[in-house]
Amino acid sequence: MKPASLLCASVAVAALASLPALARDKTEQVHFKSGHSSATISEKIKGDDTIDYMLKAGEGQAMSIQFSPDNQSCYFNLYPPGGGNEAIHIGSTSGNEFAGTLSVSGSYRAQVYLY
Image (tube, rainbow, N blue to C red):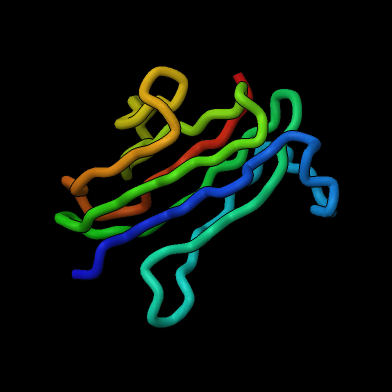
């Protein structure tokens, strides 16, 4: 299997004025272009807004997330498939990068939020 990768760059608050829409607790499915194993996403959030990025991946695949927010109070948590509330990565305590081999197949949720 190919490694799965999600590169979150410049998830920002207010600094990306060129983006037309603000998030308001939305969910987006992450798709890779044909032949690619990564994607770069830029959005902005404010206040209590969150964005959930859903990424389908298989057991044994490698996943890496490099998160580069413009606001130091912006973080991401990563949740395993199944809708549970126990994160496998908590950005506010573990930092802006995640890398690991996935233990189960399904849709992983990377939730971006302001702290």
